Image 1: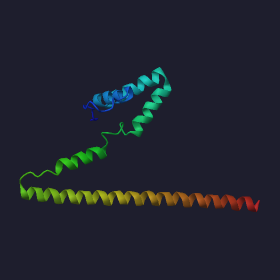
Image 2: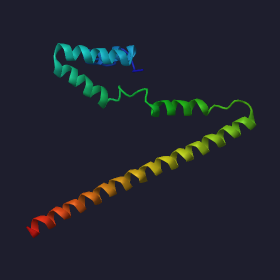
Image 3: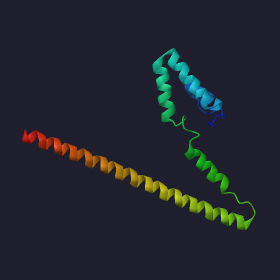
Image 4: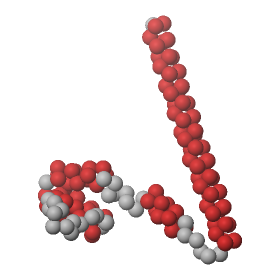
Length: 135
């Protein structure tokens, strides 16, 4: 949630800040509804809201990364059973290592695909250049 100012010396939020707080309290559906109303009323307003939602990551707050971090925080609490806690820690460490290995595999796979596509482009470009020179 957003921080609300309770001190008498705290600066008063602008109407935009208060609207942002209100929409944050209501959730993602309120942001989407505001964006749709903005598109209907005046399309640049809807477009600006969409850009802001993407830029501030309000569209992706419940993404798998956020869920993964909250799950990681939830699983770090001890259960009181030392054997289970050891098993859980070992299993989580193994799974994180497997995830890291899989992500590096995907990165290498993307790089190999990009290299193959680039090599194919250069071969086609070289063939076109040879055809124009021989003509």
